[in-house]
Each structure stands twice: as structure tokens, then as C-alpha cells.
Length: 210
Length: 210
Image 1 (cartoon, each protein chain N blue to C red):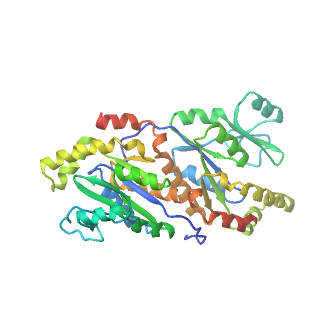
Image 2 (cartoon, one colour):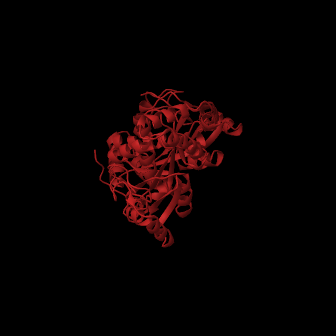
């Protein structure tokens, strides 16, 4: 049954981090497909688009100069250097959604997560671990898109990313994408029910007991 | 797919509170049936057994003298007076389960929840609200077991119980039992994934990145 009492609430900033290859992008896509109440924050980046990527959908592709100007004007909630490129979360992508009670999914790394936590202590941080480093490497190779050198770089960066696991609220091991999605979705559904975020509760309880 | 990596974790103390008639007992029963990892803590009480109730399964039925002796010897994690009877959670019912990584469901009121929070700050507190006081009264009448006087007493006590909603971590409105169960189950599944409780993570991450 669809329930009829909808209590006003603040939207969530829902952060997913993981080393490249741990399955974060797959989980993010599945979560967005499974849940109408959350949308992806489209990041800005200075890296060039890959085949098939569309500006405004996958990323906002901008030049180094544009990115720098956006940094200077405070357009970013967080931004980070990754592999010599810059990536950032636009304030404008997030604020409106949150106020409307819509949740925003952020696919960012530990650097961005640390910055965001300082701006908004109420964020929910989820870290996805691979079952093993061998499996991580296997998944990176299975993509078939990266050279040996790039894979070696990604493995090194993966270890560095994983070293920040203890800065997250929830930590999962992704052995199976479906199982991992269920867990991530449970976290999202539970966090929505936290009393402190359900700003409509005070009025609702007043309607019950005056 | 069943996952194979089982990380050691501390069990949860999972508290469900609500006014009588808001559906807490139904939700508790459904949750215990739906999830193998959580079991009910059987409380001790000085009230007499109702028809069909079994000591050791529904409650540990004890005399006033026995209950008092248990209070004096520190057998209770919490205890409270309700309608002139005493109810208490036995330390022995809980400690072993928690250490074994099994979760324990506690069906207790705001008084017990306050006491328990002081003993163990790590408890998870869920409060279930009725959709309206009229619906609560309808549900109490539908039981057909209580006199008008008892119902009036329960309605008064319900308002007092609801006034403590803001002391809980999660607050739900029970419009539909199935939907409410989904929400409670999501909270349980999410809380199990909290980093701070997954004591096996440190060793697991060490196995990944040394």
C-alpha cells in the first residue's frame, strides 16, 4: 500500500566512495534506477569527455580556466585533483534538491568527502570495498580500456583511497552487485527515517497530542 | 547470491517503542519472522500471564518479591512500572547475544529506553507513531479485550508515551504494517553496516592493503 502521510524532510547528501573498480558506478546507476527520490549530482571536470559521454548528463566538461574561475567564485561544495584533472561538486546542483526534500547522490573520493563533511556535517558517507585486491585488478582489466601503466596507477591509487575507509559512516564489501545494492538502498531508506531530518514530525506529533 | 565474507561485528540492541495499539507487537513479530539475525529479549514481569502466554517465551513471569530481588542484585539492564506492574530487561538475555554478533529486539517503553541509553549509548531507538489518535483508539477497540475504562487509560498513556518521540533515533508512522515492517527492516539492515560496529573491518582492510 502506498502511504498517504508524507512528512516534510530535508534531502540527504548521500556520498558513495570507493576505489576505481570496486563497483561504485554500477551500484550508483542501479540505485538511481531503483529509487525515484534520489538523483545524481553532475560534477564539473577538466578531463575531456570519453566516447559517448554527454556534457550536463555525465559531467559538466569545462576548461582549466573555467574551473579555476568557478573555484574562485565559490561555485563548488568540494573539488579535488585526480590523475592531474580536477573534479568538483557544484553548489547549484545540490542546494535546490535538498531544500525540496530530494536526495542527492555524490560519487566523489575521500578528498571531496572530507571537504563536504566540513561544509555539511549531516552528509551520509558510504564506502565500498572490493572483496580482494586481486578481484579489483581483475575488474579493472576486464574493462579492457586501460593500459598496463594506467592499471598500475589505479591499483596504487586504490590502496590510497581504501586507506581512508575509517572516515565513512558505513563500509560495505562488494562481492555481488545485487546484494551490495540492497545494502546501499537500505542505508538510504533508513537515513531518510532519521528523526533529526524529518522536519515535518514536530507538526505531525502536535496534530496527534496537541 | 549469498556473500562469503562475513565480518565480525557487535550485535545491536534494537529498541522498538510505541503507544499500545500503534502496531509495535505486530511489527516486532513480523521482523523476527523476516530476519534470522535478531531475536527477542524476553522481559521479566510481575503481571500475571494472559491466556495462552508461556513463561520463558512471552515473559518471565515472576512475583513482586522475586522482581525486587532481581532489581537489588543488578539483574536488569532497565526496568519500569507500567499500569502498576513491573517489567524489566534481563542483562543475561542480552549480553551473550550481543557478544556473539546477534541482534536483540527490545519491546520497551520510553522509561526503559532512557535507562538503557545510559547503560549502552550504542542502542538503536525506533519509535512508531499511529497515523491518528482516532485510528489508535479504533485499533484498541478492535482487539475487543479491553473495557472502556482500560481503553481510556491506554489513550491517556499513549499521549504520554508519544510525548517522548524526540528521544528516538528514528520515528515512523505506521499506516500499513507491511510498509512499516519494510522501514524497520531497512533501519536494522543499515545499522548493521555502520562502520563503528563492524569490528572485523580493521583486519579485513589490513588483508587488502597491509
